[in-house]
Amino acid sequence: MSEEFPRKPYGCCCSACQEQPEGDLAKQHRDINRLVASLDEKARRLFVAFLARQHGRGGVAHFSGVTGLSRTTIRLGLVQFDQPPEHDGRSRRPGGGRPRVEKKAQP
Image 1 (tube, one colour):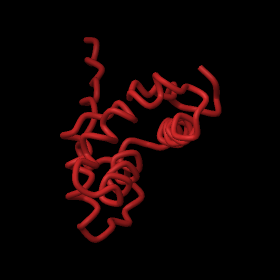
Image 2: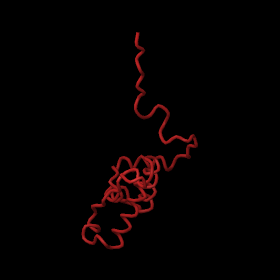
Image 3: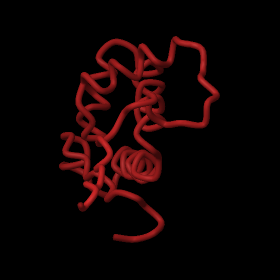
């Protein structure tokens, strides 16, 4: 994978992108997906939630199709978007992620 993008940009499968892959809307969707691919998971949720809110009714379903994020993830982003920002420098809650592997002491 490229160092520029931590994950591969999603290929939008909406009807507009399928019918006119070089159209303005398809280019806009590619740009959105390039940006989303470069964000960490919380920023990704918040950014797509922002876009969905700007779109209005049907925004969650629309941007789920554009970005490949689940509707549940985007709805979680909408909830987080309304909460005051946390400034603890972490992208996950304390205790999140894989549990640590403890080495066993050899006798």
